[in-house]
Length: 476
View 1: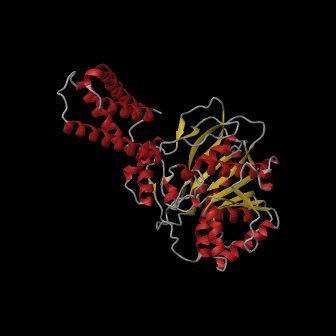
View 2: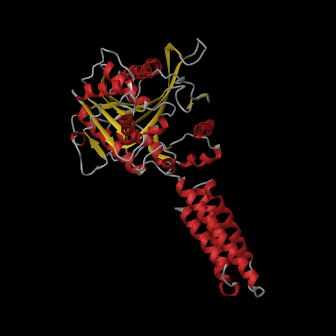
View 3: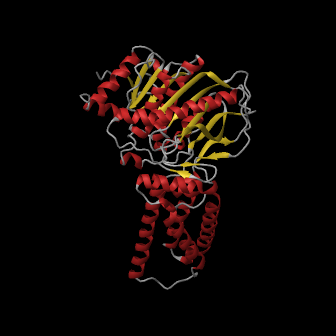
């Protein structure tokens, strides 16, 4: 809001400078004073953004010129008039360009969750002492994980409202540089991400409940991380779920540990053998998930003295994942009897065990981009195999939908960051907030039915509220 006011003040000061000083001396001084005050207030409250640099400089120069402008000036010559108008118009165009840049690369808050509960969040640092770290060369390394929990919180919640990216001990700088490298842009371009806020409250108390909350695991995609699934986790938690998202170490864009250690992406996925990648990397990820479930079983049994003791419904566990995390979610759901239901969001399936239980409730949500690609490559063995797995699942308790106007990253919070991602081909033409809302509604509806015994209307068929969602794809 202050940015919009500052842009308006900047344009007003430019217009003031284009008028005769004798007729607007007082108005000019008041406008200049207000401009400086508004600039200072904006920087103090909302913070600096490089996209607004031209606006800052122009506002400051205009304010100073208005304050120092003499009451009378020499009658301007035609050349001087032309110079004044030219400078004013040029400055106005530069301010407009800076404003457009700020609009395309906005500071935003995550969408408000639509559930009845406030949301708390906390981060766990876990070490699986029974496992060597498979992605390093030191045999002494144990598998370390960072896990973030979201859950229904007491109202009013305790703690501070969570920022999307943590800032302590240089954590934000590590995230910023890692994402910048991945996007092939300079690090400063993402500096404004530090202002993005979520809706959860850090370390808030768990909301007391007469019965335990179902547990949901969310799996990120290859080379992304838990950060990009925060809005989905918040929404599920606000509707009465305990949600856990693992950063699969060495398979994320960046993972920050409490001691300041930062790990990046060091997972070898160069092989064209999807089965080998699935067996190796998918195996690591699902061992991580199984370890987390065992840890939460102990927490729920009261071994740690946590307020979560007895509050996690370990008989109702679901899993949802995006991309490779979706494929891993499918494998874990059909091989681990503790998982009751699952969702794969736009992930290409890799071969699973012949003993897999393909009769469990499972939902496949795919992007229009993926469906179009599959139709072009139906002759390929990997697509044939994947479609046969999906078909078998659908013959039992499976469901399948796809969303028009979507691409691969429309199943993450990344779609909220900028409309420019559409130009880069990372997201589809659907509005990011609309895409996020639709995905969240269908994920919630599915798990409500499978884990709580309520809802389930959306996955029954087309709904006029969501014309973008399509059913009944038969690719084979």
